[in-house]
Length: 164
Ligand code: ADP
Image 1 (cartoon, rainbow, N blue to C red):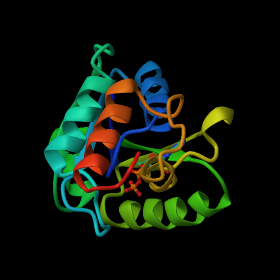
Image 2: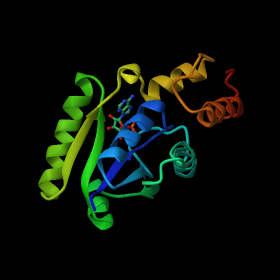
Image 3: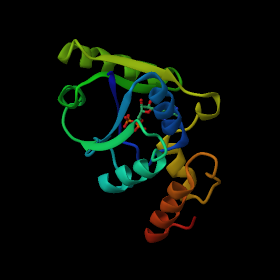
Image 4: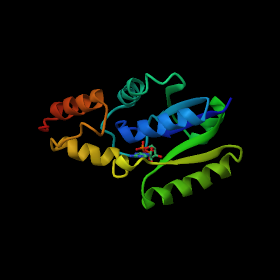
């Protein structure tokens, strides 16, 4: 059985992430979505919120599981028996970063392969950071995230006193 790890910050999960996870679930027997607990970025949602939103988003897929992790991604992949790390690729800018990360991961753990899936057309320009910018200003995000994520964004910005 090939287990694939799909790691990321998912702050918050978007339809672009779900599309990659769903497609990976047709290629591998099991996909574990690893929600990285403390990425080196400023986060809007804490780790439990990010994992909880992701769990709800992929609940209908029987072979996808969501777990929190910390530390090196390849160490975590080895620990859970994943032979593959799945990443999503949007534009050129993603390629540079993913290429460097894949080579670094390979150096640390030669037996684990990185598999990049190309984004679907409708999500080429969708990123969690752009989504948050639009949501904070009250823009339309309905087709970009599941309804529970749109609601969580609305509540979060309301609590922060930002009109949305
Ligand atoms: P990071 O892992 O850098 O913190 P994210 O959590 O946003 O970034 O994304 C996790 C993975 O999903 C990355 O490989 C990223 O390139 C990919 N991804 C993000 N948004 C999309 C999208 N719209 N389409 C395809 N892949 C995406």
